[in-house]
Image (cartoon, rainbow, N blue to C red; front, side):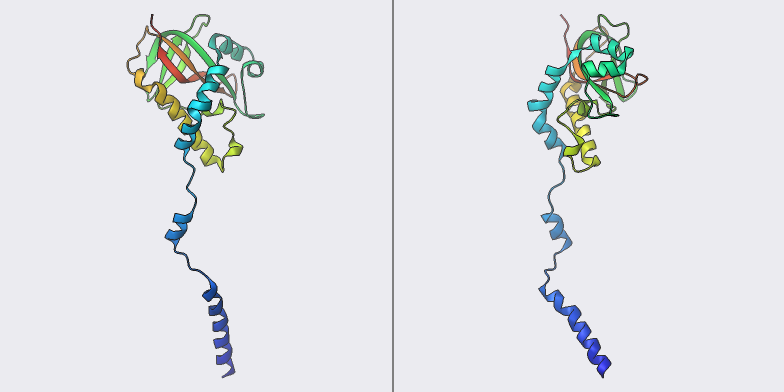
Length: 209
């Protein structure tokens, strides 16, 4: 009899705390949770007000930057570039004008080769629709990993920034042809001299006379 009473008391002790608890359905919890990071909205807020003005004011002539990179990356970085910290890739913002010498669209990672006066090799521009890397994001000092919750958010911001840049010139890419004169501003991200030097444009327009 004692054992039965003890068991009943134990059961009562287990039940009593539940009477003061509020049971919340999983769906209610999800509805009350804060919305996730919206990379598109994040980019929309800073693109016109911060990103484009930064690219315009920071761009250096491509015919000065590329030979400097080829000569000594660290020196070129100190003179023309930016990086978020030791060990991070160097970012360069460049601008130039020249004639299209080749248009490569066999791959979805399309490129445009532009002959620029003062350079012996053409400047390679990424024209998509697939754009490799995060050169646009990494060239912006006000877009810092420490300002994001995790690596996924930072990566999504990079993708959204690249997509926004592509959006600005993609509409005219199909009509571009060899012999056209183009004007461009864009970003380069490079870790070592052995890396391919390619420009991810944020501006690409026909400038034929």
